[in-house]
Image 1: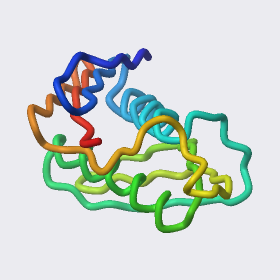
Image 2 (image 1 turned 90 degrees about the vertical axis):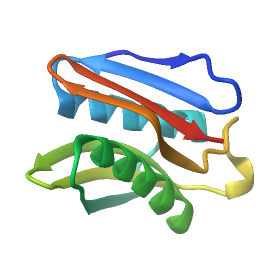
Image 3 (image 1 turned 180 degrees about the vertical axis):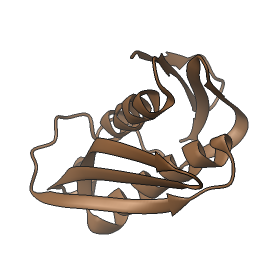
Image 4 (image 1 turned 135 degrees about the vertical axis):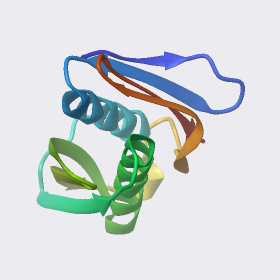
Length: 132
């Protein structure tokens, strides 16, 4: 399930596609986190979170923004191991490694936006803009 960066004037735009929406969401999440931290994560801690959503677009944006928030607030670089989708709820389970926020990767991502967000489940395709 590939993820690619699409040209964008000021921000970063990502496109991910695959066999399933859930799998594509997992790949997209980890790709974004790797852009932020630029390294493989050595598991120091187990993490999870549940987010309510009301549309496929809000599922993507809220999940990515929760990952950014949880990572920054806990000072952990995160790798998502599993994403579970239920009606109106997305849960992620992952691992984290303690980090010094001054030793980040090459990109400071502020948020995932709704700007020109595209979500399709059949076939699974997600395009999202990251505010940097």
